[in-house]
Length: 91
Image 1: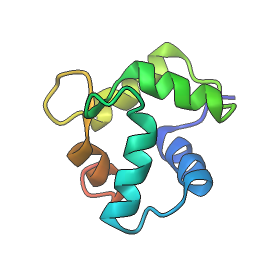
Image 2: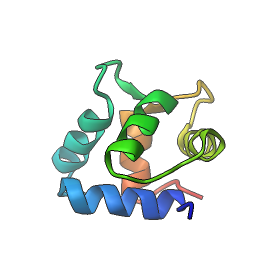
Image 3: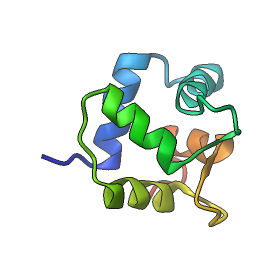
Image 4: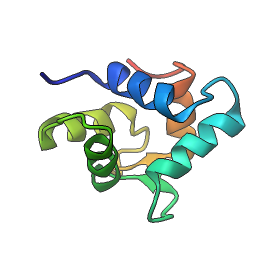
């Protein structure tokens, strides 16, 4: 069964730790951004979902990025990620 982005984030943060502080959120972001581009791409999401044993389709991952991507460049910036994690802008 597919999971939603909120559930996916919850599963990740439960495994990775602190989502209450900017520093904790930054650490989680860095775990996604393993190629150190400063953004989270579909490739990063795919790797993390696989590592966590969550099966997500390419379409679901793309939708997650679209929902979180504030400037439409197809990637999630650290600020986008912070806003999602603190539920400021996530629809």
